[in-house]
Length: 281
Image (cartoon, rainbow, N blue to C red):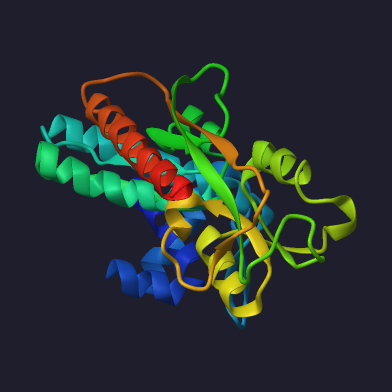
């Protein structure tokens, strides 16, 4: 296995040049070039497009990138296992509204289990189900179950329609802050917002969307727990709540995964109970 060559390949991809990779790995630039040549000969492709501005991944390099990351994670897991160390659990979320859940989970696990090595992935462009299937992640939160993977449904998210000023549903045509929260969310808000009032802006991050609404004005569906107590926000009168499913996905159960599932279920239940209390008050 050409572990050194793969590590060097990833270092170039991160730093954008052979020189940056040499500095990061504390080796000569000649050694970096030799490792990449060896890797390119073994694969029969060119991995980088070299130019005055540095080195960019070629199409073949872009194709290798996720596989190289996975191979190095697998190698690290093997090393940790043989050395008797606990490999870091890799967790990810498909939707931005769940980023805080992973942070809360890390704190919960440390209090309940002692220090637990974790890697938290907040790349929402990644297909979390496929990442779990390929072994890039151990556990992921997703809006739908994935065939072939283990999974449990956690407590749903409660989303409420809020505005920067007092208003009732159907009053005027305010800007709608549309978030990237999956098919169930899209079907939900489209059943509420009239077609003629659907001028909107799409934002990938729920937190960014809320900041935009507060500064620009408009309406948007956000988790009840996120908007509870926020000054300058008003619930839209007559707007129904949306309930967004949340599933935890994993390849297989293990002693390491079990406490994570327990923590996720507890945190989700507590968060939903708080959200329901706030939305009804």
